[in-house]
Amino acid sequence: MGSYGMGRRGPYGAQDPNNPYGAPSSPPGFWISLLRVMQGVVNCFGRISILIVQNTQAFHMIMSALLQLFDRSALLYVELARFALRLLGFRTKPRMVQPRASNGLPPPPENQQHLQGSKAAPSGPGDSV
Image 1 (spheres, rainbow, N blue to C red):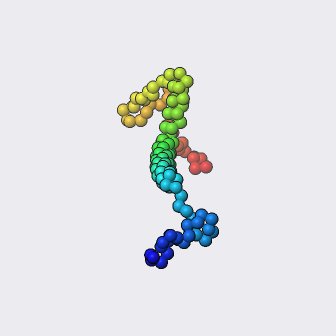
Image 2: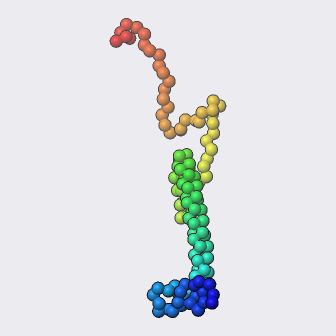
Image 3: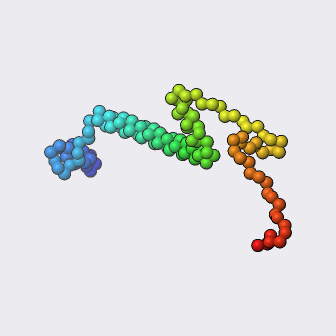
């Protein structure tokens, strides 16, 4: 005789597969090992996909910040136009640096009329009208 629950019947009762009150039979070892391997594969690809999603989000945030910075400085549209024109085969002229006058101001455009300076107010009777 053995201890309680042991013997021919096993620790879970009768080992009859048709017994609805007994414990289910254990699955074959092949299926258990296959499921463990599949769990490891799914876990590995899940971690890799999380890393890809997070890196993509970080890259998107950095590029959005750079584009907003360029947009604020009004260089974005000029650079995009130059890039597009270069892709289409057009040559763009390099930017010319405008010479400065001796007082540090840029020279006035050549084809526009210049504003006249302030004139002296007329003095005499009726100037306060």
